[in-house]
Length: 328
Image (cartoon, rainbow, N blue to C red; front, side, top):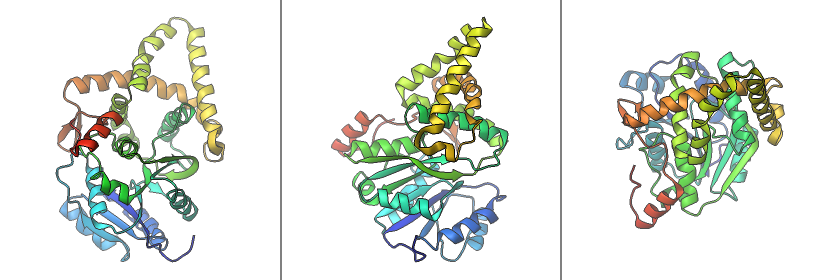
């Protein structure tokens, strides 16, 4: 990529931290990133953290407060604030743990020339802690049966402005954005061969996210039905070791297919598929815990509860036609 910053694109990073152990590493990443395109960090951290970040970030980074308190989902708050402030044609929206290379930035922006939203593929770089290996089982199964949902998307700003943004009252915000683009008649480019690194979270955070991540299934009825059937299926398999071995074998085979799709073997280690049965066992339990959460009003999130995982394309299309926000 040309070393001069691109003026028709901007990188939007929604941020909300309660501790700054990764600040030095993030600043190093942002410093390199700023040489390739403008960077806007929309920071929902507390006053003390916000001030620390402002002093630490490279001078080229635009650093601002969130401005959409009506959003229950803080990431959507950050994205919509960024949309208000940017003049760029193309936006790269990324979580704070996503790490682009210059070539990956170029590829996303090139794809946006013919698409309204680009969905790349995240992976955890080596060496992987055990819980990142566990979560890679999920990624590979997603790839086997369709596409994974990464922590970053490329999107045309004009389309998001035309739709009035997207709902901030959902848990699965990236799916909501993708469906909003589709409901507006936009085109999605699935770039499963565009591999972008994502730093693994701590083991503590990994465990805290298990039920919340399972809750995303309530936005995908077919997937939800399949996941709810996992626990009865595993219970049946436990009665006969041969059945359990067969279940594990099928899971590993499917994950291995996902590993090899789209050049995935370049970034996913050869043993990654072996973790698929572990992840399926986790999901078999957590999807039922998520169902209990749903009956209780939703998933706790930043002092409130979010009940809706994501709206359907049909609902979004209807509400866009009416010119109103979707009702959770």
